[in-house]
Each structure stands twice: as structure tokens, then as C-alpha cells.
Picture 1 (cartoon, rainbow, N blue to C red):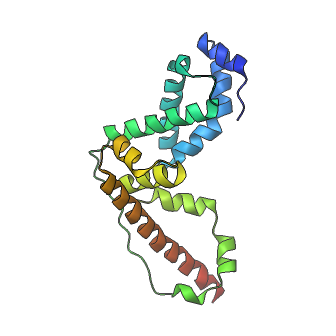
Picture 2 (picture 1 turned 120 degrees about the vertical axis):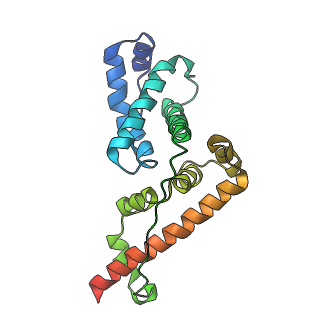
Length: 187
């Protein structure tokens, strides 16, 4: 995403046309980030709009020596973390029973791989318990280390590591389930 410096200048002058253009240009990237942290598109769009509001209100702090995309991504992730902290008392947990009836070794992985796509992976990530999902995304997707994650989420470094391990284990189980379903198509 390449943002014309004139658009940023227009946003600094609080010009609605420039703000609208910036929103259109950054919508896809910001929504993609928000969708990694929310289970449905409507909630992700709420986060996106909160993030974009912060981008517009803090655009005077943007330093032109760094890419706008990186700065906007950072503001968006910080907004997501802030919202998560506000909702931290929500103890909703994802619980699912896994079907282990079909051994994963009996299937052709090349055929199964063709049926498994990025959307399936995104859905698996969305179905992780909320804290594990946040840690997984921050560590695997966004590249933060456990110390940074701990500070952002107000948890210990060890707890961050545990959530990552738990997320990986849960995703392996989900993947086995998906592969078992795909395998039944070939039998």
C-alpha cells in the first residue's frame, strides 16, 4: 500500500476528502489485521473503525521516515490490544470435542492439501480461546516476542509461552479433525 504524501497532508489539515481516500486505501490491510483477532467480520470492522479513528487523531505523530503502512499497522494492533484489555473480564472459552475416528496416516496429503486453504487456517485461529488467539497472532503473525506480548497483554512471559503452546496444540487437533474429514471424502 503506497499512500500519496498529499493524502497525509490533507488528513493533517482535517480534509474529509483526504480522510475518505486514506480510509479506502488502507481498509483492506487494516481489516485483514482486525480479522486475525476477531471471530466475525462485524466485530473486526468495529475494531477497524476504532483503529482508523486513532490513526486520524494521531496522524500528526506519524513520522515520514517510516512507511505509513507500518505505522498504521502498529496503531491498529495497539487499538486491538486496548480493546482486549477492556474486555479481559469476559471469560468466554472455546471448547470443542475432537473426532479421532479416522487415523490421519491413512490419507493422501497432496489431495488433502488442495482442499485446505488460508480461509480454513483463519477460521482455526478464530476458534482458539481468546487469550491464546491473541498470543498466537502477536507471536506468529505479527512477530512480537514473549516479553513484548506479556507487556501488551499484562501477563507474564511464561504465561505468553503457555498460551502459544496451547494454541499450537489446539490447532494441531483442529487440523487433524479437518484432515480426517477430508480423508473420508477419499474413502
